[in-house]
Amino acid sequence: MHLSDFKKYLSLEKHYSAHTSDSYLRDLEQFQELLKTHEVSLDEANYSMVRQWMSELMDSGISSRSINRKMSSLKAYYKFLRAQGHTEKNIMTLHKSLKTSTKVQVPFSQKEVGELLNQPYDKTSFVAVRDRAIIELLYVTGMRRAELISLDINAVEVSQGRIKVLGKRNKERIIPLLEHTQTILLDYLSLRDELSGESNRFFITESGNSIYPSLVYRTVTSYLKQVSLKVKVSPHVLRHTFATHLLDKGADLNAVKELLGHSSLASTQVYTHTSMQALKNIHSKAHPRNK
Image (cartoon, rainbow, N blue to C red; front, side, top):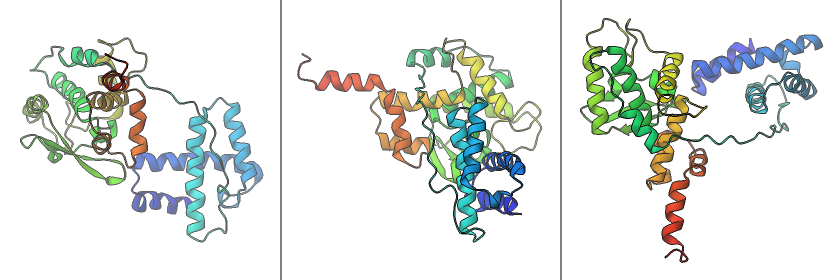
């Protein structure tokens, strides 16, 4: 019963997406399977059992990052139980996350993105124009893949040159559109209007249904692999590239934070680590040894 209550809590009070809530529940159900060997319920578990689960996960080759995510699910659940008065203590209070190696994502260069966006495409084909609009919007706005998929058609105000994006925890932000982007979106909308379907999503399939994660991933990878040899190619790398290129051009960190929809500046500062060109320019101009 507590699991169903917890799911409602994640959805109604924490405003987590259905995908995130389901991930939390899956982690708890996995831990529940281990607890069957101890003949105890989730509410009766202790921290030594959590440690046992962690050991089993590590032995099976699960990464430290993934294990930390599962532990976050446990922490949230036991914090919920205590807050609701179902238990007197949170068994995860003293838990410390495993150390993880920081993976530096290399953004695409401005040259690569330029080649990408200058590629010709069939402007009479709905799929070709839609896919081109997806690439354009991901790079020009820096939005997340999930935000792109859930984008409502009324949220894209092309004539006003802006787009309303609903981010994590239902936090809305407004991102301006470039004139070139507006033109591409208008091309897409003219073809979209010819299709039958009742989806209110901005991006749809040929059958009129909302697009889905794997479609966006395939679109991005097929486009980017034509201009780059990078192994890591994904929608998130385009978001990473968006932030890095803005910072390279001298954009204010707080402004980039707002555009990305980050809740804290610490999340945005990750992108300053790869914005080396901006650092080189500042160093070159400011250092007295450079004549």
